[in-house]
Length: 122
Image 1 (spheres, rainbow, N blue to C red):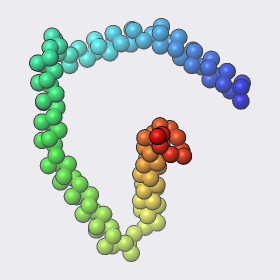
Image 2 (image 1 turned 90 degrees about the horizontal axis):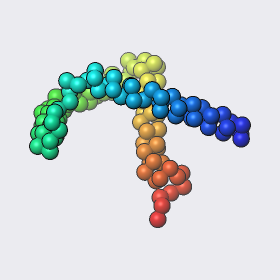
Image 3 (image 1 turned 135 degrees about the horizontal axis):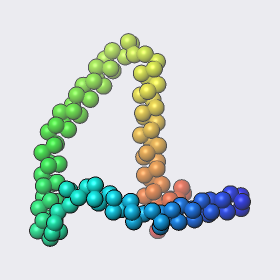
Image 4 (image 1 turned 90 degrees about the vertical axis):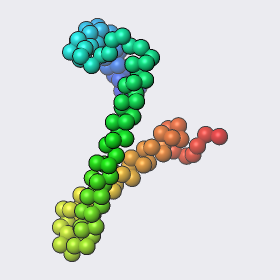
């Protein structure tokens, strides 16, 4: 176990050195490539305007999302009505999806507890 820890530490050290050496050039390259998205000058008013644009853009997308949700629910209802025609593969995919949702729920609970399995901190 100790040898594995030493290996992980050496890999982390190598990664840290790589980032320190190449990180700034990657950062500059990324900013240069996407400079048309940068707002100059970055004032408080401009940031507030952009946050309002994001908020109202998200609000405007709600009807489309609701329609998509209704279609998904109708599809699920149709599958349930015709469950005798359901293939084993479809049932397996649904079961795996449910298992994945449960796993994400459990992961969220563990993270919310502060990465403990036994309970919440007092």
